[in-house]
Length: 382
Length: 223
Image 1 (spheres, one colour):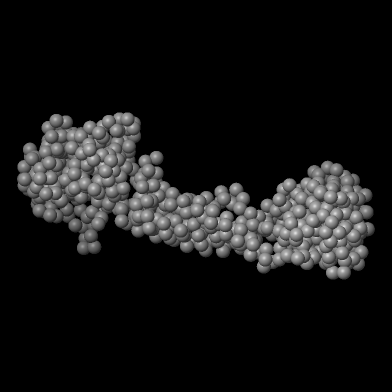
Image 2: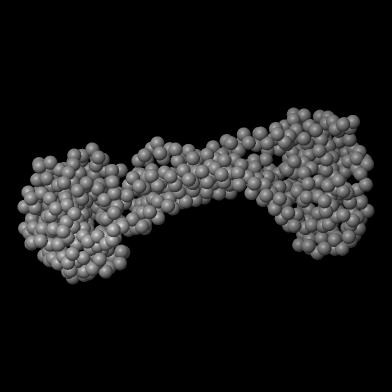
């Protein structure tokens, strides 16, 4: 590991130049972490919510985007409905244990828009077993609130929520152990929602199966029913479409972050090029006293990667702070009730890999120059 | 280590066409000899030294080190020969400024894979031999030119080479430092029977050699 020792000495040789490069990488990695923490947080919360539900088949209108109630409450929601009579048809099918209708609304809260899920109170524990309830189950004129939302709104059990002309008593608070969107919803009885909106049906149908592995078969049979304007998706299909949707958010944010990363790469390459040209005689001397070409190239690579990695580690902390600020900004701008950004271990790992990549790209051209350097030319270099 | 050059030609490509640097140089340096190469600037002295030191390859001819033609050897072999059998001393010392005196001396031994204890022991002995054992932990930049050149000599001896190649070792030194450096080299040649080849302009330096060769216009003028 001689090359690492030599590389680390060279990193601190020109402190000002190294510091500037480090700052460049810090900003690039920081913006990468901050921006992608939104997509990462969104994805984790969506996955946690879907995993927390005991729903194996979803029936929803063709016009609806399969996104689990978030990220902004009713995004992807269609005004088309599925007639309640179809729920009975589905219930008759083999392997079907429970069928429930779902309605979604969004209410205006004190601080933000509150996403609402209307569900049969009798089925809530069965479809969402990951939720723990503090207080009593909801009855007519009552709602449950996610603990996160209640905290944001400054409400608790027994408080009164108002939506237009209707008033609801908060019967209890629910919380999930998985950090999903479920902590930021209002839950109301399905019958109340249908009655208040004069709906002709429900916006989603959730199906729980005795054998989860029979989901593709049950979904196919539901599709054979040819429910007007609706189709059935297995949980995996639903999750896949959600993930694809989030991937586009990720790609958009990645493209923005990539601009910073490209600038950092150029800065790293510029630093390494200057540093290499200044030290060609040293490299030639190393070769003359017996160092292999590979060792000298590894030294340059090591130097650049060490510098970028240091910038990357600092960038992760910077990105974590920036992510918090960005999250607050998004919450205020879009009137969301729940925190979206999440700096996950996966994102930290990606940021570290990105730092190494920036360092390696930055050292690529200098490494080629040194690889091709003739020792006698290097020894004459001034 | 004995050195034999057979019909060495060296041309460099230039925009005006091939530029002749060495022409038909044939030379034998016996093992343990102290040889000096003299000649005017541009006569090809350094090029000849670089060819002997496996730093460059001739256009034609053979460079035999211990009866092995290193001119036709692959780069890996030439690297190993430079590392284990040849010690280089340069006019500008060419020490690594980020390292201390001791670290500079130890570097070739590290490259050769010597154990840490062996490296420390050998580096200590070498620094004592060149009178710099008290300066081991200092940065090389803080030393005088003569002292830096002595560090370079200690570094060149790190892997117990059989051949020392010195390119104008006193070129940047004053008279006193030149004398010190040359006495160290002479002493190494006498006691360890290491072959020493020096390129110099200075007749006083050349006088330390048993044999002086003159180059003129890329040809060996006399020996």
